[in-house]
Image (cartoon, rainbow, N blue to C red; front, side):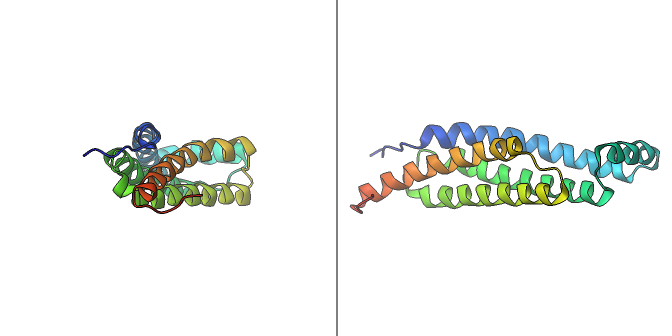
Length: 152
């Protein structure tokens, strides 16, 4: 017996985007770590950071946050794709959605703190986590309805 998973499309599509984006984030972070360790790149890097108004410490923290976000997005994306049809796994996807939203807000708070705040960045960074969460929420509601729990 196959259970209808109304959030399947959201979890599947957003999960794929998260996986693709996370690979890019992880590769970019790794390249930035390597670049920071190369003496020949330091003058150009320092000049670029100075022109952008960013300190070296802020850049390093941003690299770490990006790497962590890449790992979180990879895990959540794989969980979303693997469990998109399984409403009994909706709670796991729901928790992943919350983690995605909270981490995006943490990264945006750091951006605001470091002086690189942009409302467009906030909106853009929350689109995929909110769509993922919505898909998980739809599956969770379907599970609750199947179990006879009243959903309002």
